[in-house]
Length: 384
View 1 (cartoon, rainbow, N blue to C red):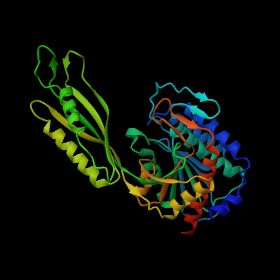
View 2: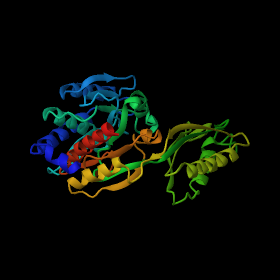
View 3: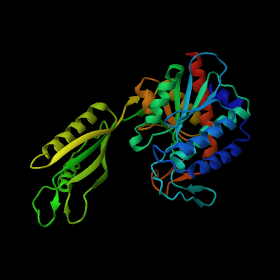
View 4: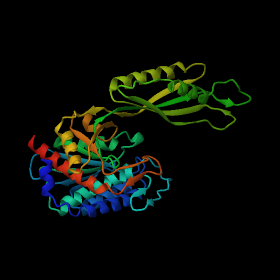
């Protein structure tokens, strides 16, 4: 089927669309969009949705942006096509752009996920300008709150809103070209807070310190050896606390990220962490644990038609696809039993670093495989 689609479209101008995608990505990247502060970027996307011919454009309370490309069928089932707008960088991060010739572009957030959002726009533009009417409705949605403590909040809201009239999800992550995420790993995030009476470092020496106790908890956590199969990991990503160098700390906090390909080992890891924390609560030390993130797990078998379609779309652009598991907006539909894959636009690296970069050359083929996959997914949903 994909081979037939390949012949139906005029790809002669795909390089121009790739150039437009990069231009759009740079325009999007220039707008700061830390998680929970995506409003300005969402407004730009809404304007572009209107420009490229989408219908029923709307922004919800979380700054998700919705646009409809109507399909041939009046069936109440369509495809949800998504990319997240938020970044890991705070408002004070310089968003400088640097070029390595005409091959590589460096900029914070350019790959994760400005180029993904730009591709969302360009695919809509390509289909509009070529007069392509998909087999069923396609909902284009720029989601928010994908990163960090956003806990996939934008996708959760978008999926709740659309789930009764969609049959598949195609999600974009900018740097994932050549990879197909058909499994969403389980993620739990804990905030561990230690409190104590505190005091003066000289006068009250020997009194319990919240920081000392938190460091001991952290040291014990880093002594845990999680299983290799199924792959399970943890990371202490944030530590804060204390008042001054000569004060015994009355408060200290850590944020712990735990991940696993399966839910059971993740639950065991969390139980071990909680036991360590509970054992530290004595002699004037109090420990409180709050769940600050809970991303659901789900998967799609490697022989599912949507996965096969994603592999076939890559094969059409002469790329051998690799199946992956990870934590993306795709977790939400997968956990609900809705077929979903996450694919990429280009290659690059250094995600979540200020020297993040994208490669320019793969963008054209990245767009082509997205269009082929999206149209195949729409045909599948129409005929199921």
